[in-house]
Length: 135
Image (tube, one colour):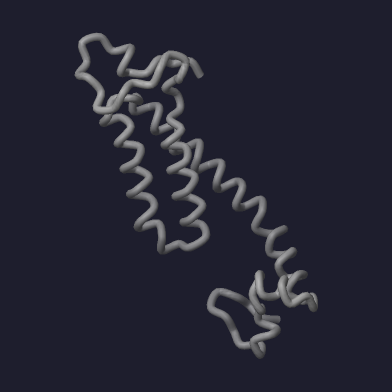
């Protein structure tokens, strides 16, 4: 979008802590917040326990962009929502097809592919892996 950054637009504001990006480098949405939100959601969906680390770090990254004076609060809030939503949709859309490809690759006889994808439960003696259901 074409919203001017607060370090240029707010008259009488304190100087920003970092150099203000040049004209044409718009404020909305915050790219840093988009990436932080996407990383936090994707990592949390992969390993739930990581939420205790990734969510506070993403919020801290978003806050830092407002604190240094280069974004408005709504820039980072929308960035977090945009990145998190995009990551969730991509992870949900690719989980099924990726699992099918990995399962097919594990049943093959190419050692390099089996090494890359892991042996899978069939080659480990059919023991139950936590979180997985065996037929």
